[in-house]
Amino acid sequence: MASSIKRKWPEVKFGVGPVVENGFYYDVDVPNHTLGVDDLSDIEAEMKNIIKENQTFEQFNKPIDEAISWAKENNQPYKEELLNDLKREGTTVAKDLDAAELGLSTDTGSKVEEVSFYKNGDFTDLCRGPHVESTSQVGPFKLLRVSGAYWRGNESNPQMQRIYGVAFNTQEELDQHLNALEEARNRDHRKLGKDLDLFVFSDLVGSGLPLWTPRGTYLRGKLDSFVQDLRNEYEFAEVTIPHITKKDLYEKSGHWQKFEDELFKITTREDHEFAMKPMNCPHHAQIYASRLRSYRELPIRYRETTMVYRDEQTGELGGLARVRSITQDDAHVFCRENQIVNEVKNIWQIIRDFYGRFDLPLSLRLSRHDPANMNKYAGSEEMWQKAEKQLREVIDQQLDVKIEEDAIGEAAFYGPKLDFIAKDSLGRLWQVATIQLDFAQPESLDLYYIDESGGKKRPVMIHCAIMGSLERFIAILIEHTAGRFPIWLAPEQVRVATINQEQEILEFSDKIKVRAKELGVRVFVDDNNESIGKKIRSAEMMKVPYTLVIGNKEVRRGVVQPRIRQDLAVVAAHPELGVEEFLKTVVNETKSRASKTSL
Image 1 (cartoon, rainbow, N blue to C red):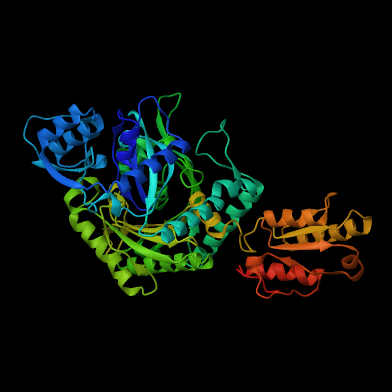
Image 2: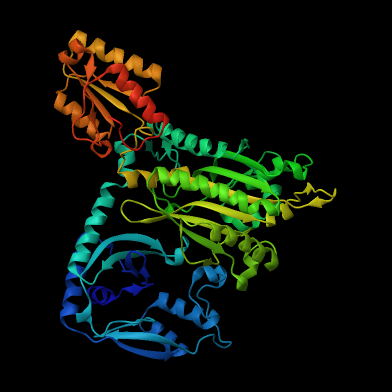
């Protein structure tokens, strides 16, 4: 792809071009030209020409200083910056480097002696490889899209054009992947969220700040009620905290130093510095610390569904998946060390019950600290070893979740965590629930309880979120179900569609609505002057579980024959029912959180 771009735009400057989870991309800087869909077709055509030319891939090394000279001579400033970092620090990974020193040259020795290049035809690029032997061995591919990307993820740097593509061994695999992408586009939560009237965004309110409609608010509420019902079985007590806090709290907990750039900060008229809360744990810790605690009280379990705020960069926002106002179904357990295993197992059961209801199979990742970079974490190496051992003990006792490899360096700054990974109906993986073990904040916030001997002892904090972010989970759920929510969760459970506007039909439909409301069934009556076919299609578009077509026969006999959404149906034919019987069936399905109809 880079060879093809170089042929069409000889002055192009290249950034980085890595393999990623679902394909590859290259960041390019094409002077005075914005790449579009037509350009992708032209690039693809030139790529096919290069494949036909059967160019050999030749690998060679250059001493680091010669490589830097090569970048200068070929007017490749981004490559020069990367090579300077390689020479100075031995890596090009921006997150592992001091931001103030990115790209700086050095004359005081080098961390690497030489670097790898590849050449095909008249094109040469800095690359560690490996490659196939020649371009003719490249399989079927497709360029997908172009997006903007700040160089090295820094908005103060130039914005480059990122070209995404995929490649496979066979055309069949490529076609399957493209079909899956098309299905994913049809299920895009941003599109379905608008079509189903769940949420909106407003330029006047701001990017990353969703506004929830009545339907979307109902959906959020039902999901949260499910989580809290599961937590109530384990005696989590609900608490409430404010949305802003003094700087002092986050300085003491360590969050200010760690997340200062992500905080929304507020200065009062009296010059006091506050922040919109980006997390809830230090606040819940203050409730715990508000009075003396005995070992007999532990474990203490707090829960709260509340919004937090983070100053995400505009380019990183995306529908509900990445927002600035994040609703967390957060909870914190304060317990003794010998209670950790049991408490984590209880939370694990909540997670198992919740995701099982949505047919989202889970795998697990243990996110651990990196012993070589202890400056990233709070607490001692001994503390971390102890915490990770406790989580490993819980993992060893669970048999129903596939354990992925440990993720070294992916722990929270205050402790290791269990990250649960859900697989959706399109085969995509999403990090969802977390359980985090924290020995550090009880120390920094001076939390303690009185033990059996009358001495002070530190509790352990367990952080646990089931959905994590309601916004992100709802995005996943919309795409997983294609907006076809189960009966108990659907914002509209029953659509009553009148065949015409005769008075008896309208009155009968209104009686159904009144009785449904009494029973707590969510119903909408479509009695406008459209054809019945159009009304049925409208109900299908809104993915309503049950549609009742009301005509003279239904009025005369006092019965209904519900049309059932296809994914909910168990049998092909559905019997006539009395209105009361039908509505009470919906009530029972809602109470049991049924995933299929019982009709």
